[in-house]
Image (tube, rainbow, N blue to C red; front, side, top):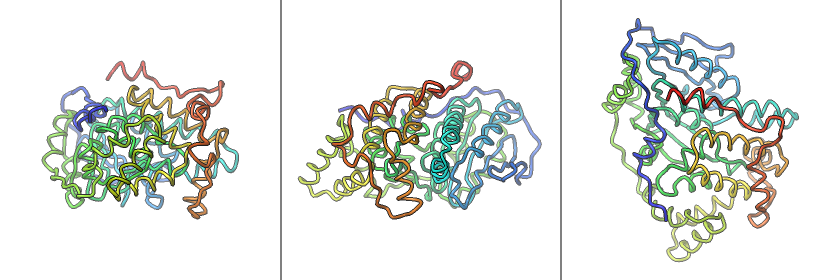
Length: 405
């Protein structure tokens, strides 16, 4: 069995070490919103020599759509080129950071037959995630509240991730007939032990303390201290990651994991989720449950049985391949998988999952294939191939971007 990777290793893999250009002064700004797009989807605050982007769809838990990502891409590019901007902060408005991609809108576009608009969404968000992962300036994400799916995707590749006691993280895509995407196969595959497989297949949630403990977050603070953290960031005049690191460390809190936390069960997670197939994982959990009557194993089995069988198999493959791939390679592969998932050529599970969980809310999806034994290897292989030859793969500016990182 592969030994557990430390949280420090994950931190080194995911955090970007950016060159220091020296401190540059900028006249203090008010801290009130300066710029917003026509629909107010992303607001901007400025202070010191930082800029803060605010995801502004609180009624949808800041779910991400194409217009938001276009706006973020434009802002981040301009800030990267601006010598007066030392670092960038990203946060969500109100009680959520971002609940993920706006999959209900994607569902509606698919119902209307607008597959091209859906492709454009995935192209846009994956391109931005890569841009963030190669960003030349320090990036601080304030992950207060719900941080799921695409919300994690547009934050975890950055330099610093601050979780709070109100943070809720998850990659619940298998429960809607999809696969953990938006870079998830990269960062989940580098978690300690086989925790990434567990989170990818079950969609289980982590709180802020757990995120820090496993390395998904770099810092933790209580929500009561978050305003002072933001104020300190606004007053910083620097582009040096070590200076930001020291400032964040001064406001951090000691975490205490709940006794029931999955982090305390990492040995069991490793024992059960280290296997090569989903069937073997389930068999191992069943054996563990029979021997010990472990309620955690029983609950984990229940979660797996609620997920789409095809999604379980392609998600396991995705995480395992992510162990040996760079961020850009993971995004290119995930783009292929996502287009296959939404196209309905192999299965209609994605639309069915959204219908059952978020539209009709009958919570009784009819998965196709209906069971693991009906999922063929050909289906899994096809899921990971380009959708068409006309526009087969996500094109990322790797030569241009990575020459500077």
